[in-house]
Image 1 (cartoon, protein in one colour):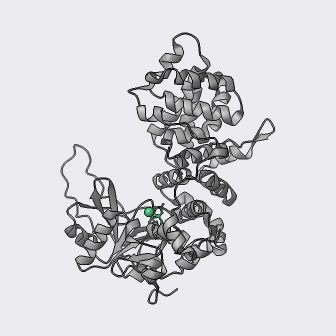
Image 2 (cartoon, protein in one colour):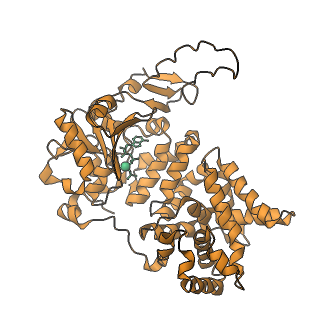
Image 3 (spheres, rainbow, N blue to C red):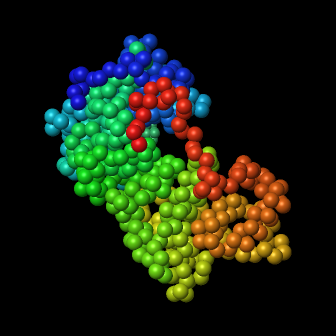
Length: 477
Ligand code: ATP
Ligand code: MG
């Protein structure tokens, strides 16, 4: 691995074609090139195209500074303080353009060091008090890290090779050069794609300390691609897993959603459990998973994620509160039942169990209040499925939130084998009242239920095209 001497894979020897890249990304690449700048497709887009998968998004790296990118594109906005970059807006797509970063300041020990988790904000003047002269805020440092090496800000620009080695995993650090359509590999990423390996770039301990969220990302990519985690990378993940708790709770919430909505959530969950990361993200929930209920292990989370995987693979991604309700519903129901035993009403017990979960999670994974309210409503609505007499079923069917509640009801009934007749009754009832759901989420109502796990359709991620033409770049497993 030498940032001065990359391996260049010329166009005939790899599978990436411009026709697989989003036309907007191609437009941005060409505009940068014509502006006299280097312009590379980078990250997951290159990785996925080489694997014959459909990329989720297309990221671009360039030697143009964010300001220079802004000058080239009218439809551009600069975002991010921790990691400044440009967003180029098209009506249905945002193309992210980042300037090549350099690791040099970090390695030379010249990065500014702070003890605080972020740059100090200027103290506001006391409300209603006399106007005080506020000293000008000092220009924030471009590179900032904590005493033990966690990066808080990363805005030092550099050369392409420097940019490659400060990315997370070798398979995520490949560049596709629009100037000659070659793939540039500074880090052995093409070999790791062939071997099916997630390998952190550089010293694993240093790189995971710099940004502990990379530990979670390793799990995500391993599950998503069906890759193994390289030995040293894996060892460092285990050694440093508790540092994940140092990452911002908002960022960990975003990462958690990605983990569960990948379409491989069950696999991800097993890997999170095996590595002990599930306990770092969800400490109390993890303890509960380790206990048994009436002699049976708690297996509902895995089943819920299989259900979610089937939905995602059928192109029907559950909304966030439904996702969480499915995954943690049993935990909340047991908590609520416990509260009811001490005299709390069933309504209050559910409310308190959900609030308790959000509260205990807040230091690690910051679940928004709105999501909590959605989970609560799903659980509060469950008793309505018991009432099949008179006008009640129809009025429930017409209620906002019926579909979310029914998804949960169907899942718990299938997972436990209970209330089958009731489930069948509701299915018939819904079928015989097709108009009742109109006007409140027709789209959702019209969607077919997820297929049974056995008859699951494979997600259409794999494209026959490029993978066939160059099987050499595909993973082994
Ligand atoms: P996905 O398919 O989920 O979009 P991705 O690899 O594109 O996967 P992104 O989060 O979109 O992941 O990030 C784009 C690229 O930026 C990565 O491929 C990687 O090169 C780099 N990157 C992202 N996060 C980090 C990080 N925490 N540390 C180092 N490099 C990172
Ligand atoms: Mg991406």
